Length: 176
Image 1 (spheres, rainbow, N blue to C red):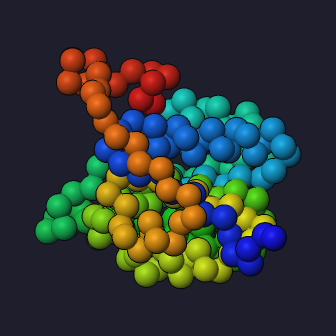
Image 2: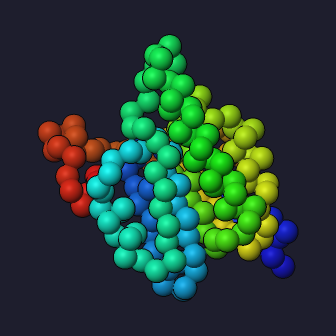
């Protein structure tokens, strides 16, 4: 019997692959003619591989609701990052409540909460507006306990080693 709540998947940890796993779910959903919305919190790069690819997938919409690297909370720029994150959460909440999408990805939402751009309570309240026909995927390092508890599937990516340490710069098709 299907629960009377949305399916919630969370990818967290310090390892590579959280967004990639979420985008794999978007790719799979598109192959089944399901509609997906990806809201990227924090990220602001205009031309990444995922943005380019998503433009070609039927039923996929992607919104960047971030301003890039988060400044310290004491920086005057921090408020603008909070505002951008709140606007992204507003878009995600509307999509979740309207049930216009089958899959909603909240990319980097965990870090947005941990860094103080959004409150955990606001994110949980947004997710509670959904029904069982919507799958919600959250990603990001340092997932707060409340989001972990809310999710029914949680995967932690653990970094064993990373190319950055060996001197590899961010590479097209791998990191962006």
